[in-house]
Each structure stands twice: as C-alpha cells, then as structure tokens.
Image 1 (cartoon, one colour):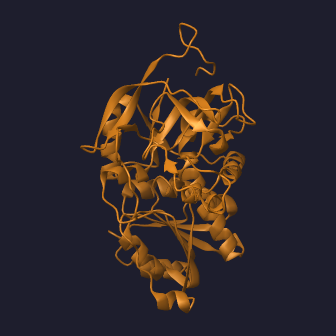
Image 2 (cartoon, rainbow, N blue to C red; image 1 turned 60 degrees about the vertical axis):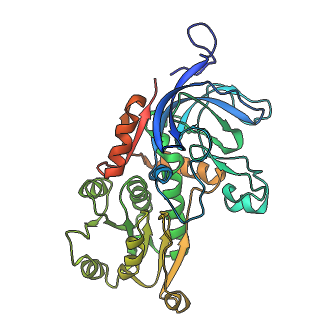
Length: 363
C-alpha cells in the first residue's frame, strides 16, 4: 500500500471512487469524487480498509432517537476505517507520514468541553457530526480525519482486517471493561451473556474470554452462533429454536447470568434480557434500537437490575482498546468486498446473512 503522497505522476490523483448515500431517494451509488484537501487539524489518509457497521443501516430506516441522518447533499458512507497517513496538517501533533492509523468519526466538536469528555457527539458547540452519517466518511480511497480522533496502530497490527476495531471493536471493548468494573468480581466465577453475536458481539466474546469470563452467546442467527462458538463462547442459544433457553441459561449459571451485554438493536432483546440476569445483575446497553426501550422503574428502584451504557467513547479509550487487542490477539472476522460490490454488502447485512463484519479492501 502506498504511504507517500504520490501516484504514477508523482502527485495524488485528483479523483477517486466513493460509495455515496443519496438522501433524496435513500440509495447508494459509486460516484467519482475529489481527493479531499485537509485542514490544519487534519490528516490525509490512504484508506486500506473500511467496514460496514449495522448503524449505517440507520440511514435507510426511520428512528425515534432524535438522530437527523442522511439529509442534504450526497455524502460518502462509512465510519470505520484505517490506513496510512500521506499528509499531516500543520496543527497535528504526534503523527508523521507513513504511520498506520485508525480513528473515531466525530468531527466539528471542540474535544475540550465537559460534554466532550463523555462523548464528542454531545459537544456543547452543538455542531458535532458523524463522518459517514452526515458528512463524508471512509468508503473511499483517501479521506480526511481529525488528528485528535486518530491513534497510531501497534506495530504488526493487520491493516487489512483492523477497520472494525474503530467502532465495533472499541465499543465492544468499552462495554466489557464497564461490565468488569461494575461487577467487580472474579471473572472465572462470572457468567456474562452476549446478546447479539455478530459484528460487535463476536469481538465482545473475545474481550470477555481474554479476561477469563464465562460467556453465554445468544442470537437468532445460526451463522452468528457458529461464529460465537469459534470465538470461545462457552454456551450458545438461539431463542427461535431453543424455546426454553431462559430456563436453560438460569439452570447452567445457577441463578442467571451476572451480566448481559446487548449488542443488538432489538427492542424485544432488551425486553427479554432481564429474564436471564440474576438479581442485582447488570444489563449493559450498547446496541441502539430505532425505537425506545422500556425498563421497569420497580426493577431499577429495587435493584432487581442495574442498567448501564457503553459506546465507542474517546481516543484515549481507543488507544487502550488497540493495545489490549494486539496483546491478546483479538481480531475481527471480516469478509472483504470490492467497492463496486457495495450494494451486495448492504443487502447481505440487511438480510442478516453474514458472520462478524463486512468491509471494503482498497488497493
């Protein structure tokens, strides 16, 4: 992969292909677009791989979460990517040409306010945007990223498969770390259910097993459960076919799992999760349904259930995720496509017929 600012004529090409969302009719087209020019606080990266997140499907579906997605002019999709720096903005610190980097997708935030310390999307400026959701993202060969969002990848980490770590991976990692801290008990004597064993869940299982937790995988997809077992899940259940799975889970765990991490966007999955969690157990809210999720005030007030949340957080947590992933050999399972086959990749995700993550591998 090229890591210098050059093409065959000694300069960057002026144009590139990109998978762009068309807000007017909610379709995706492969368009020819300019190579971006970077601002002083940005890095120009030659993308090696970009991956599709289930959140990308929110562009095509209504939601009641107050998210205003996919409006205005066409923009390049994708908020998970990694590659090599070809140009460094004058204000960027700690980066050089040739560095392999990945990054978080929030732009037009201040990075400094109290809200940004929780999540940059809440920035008090009110201007924060998600690359790939409202402004250009990463399904293109060259992209501009904010240097404060970026992290240099550990030596030896594979660019071809690492893209999912920069949303699915860090979200899964943060959910596991938050669960571990909330439980504060010996992982070897602790059962954690992973609800949704796909893009985020198959990584969550790896992080949990690296800590020594006992893992119960739950999913409606046989392919996802097959991947869960491959990643080390101790037990797996399909509520569609294992009709007594609640009783079975409670029996094998004693009184129920000590925690459950829901990586799905399913309201029924959230509604059913308390049934497999023991008293005063933890439900980690990670997946975001299109509709609101109900919880019993009695359950929360009486400590029947502790509800917590996790997300991709900030760049310092991203660095922790990369270091942990590299140390423990945690890798996304990625099925690669060509950019011209983007619609096929979208259709496969819509149908739920994939294992792990899917992405585009650039030359």
